[in-house]
Length: 165
Image (cartoon, rainbow, N blue to C red):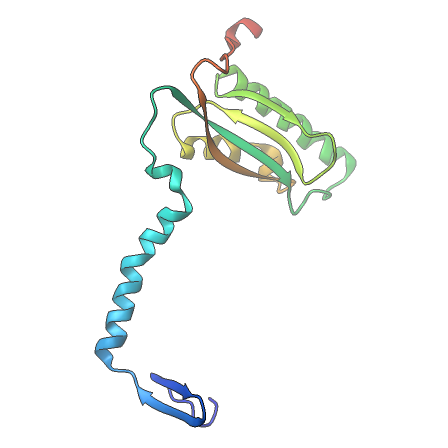
């Protein structure tokens, strides 16, 4: 520790006067700690304001998946990358056949956004589980971020996937 620095002491600096040291009272320290525990859940809710929005009967919630380059994007041989890509496409077809994936496709500009997926499911957690099933995501070649997305009912026509099997 630095000389003159003591644990549990608060240094108060005053302009024109040397710094003074005072001991913080245990009651004040406990009160500040308790306040931190009380405010922590509130700050978590602020990061997800959509959780507090009441459902609108005129809107349908879908889950938008944004694929970006993962930490292992260039890992593996050409044959290994081709195999994982084939598994990725098979997974997309499976989710579409199950009616869980409405739209998917790559972003061909080679920018940070690699692809977009729109999931139709009951919850954010389900969308995250479906996204985690992607072989490219599991291999670390892609990362996916899921966001709830709402649109007017009927503006997206859910395809009848059974017709396309």
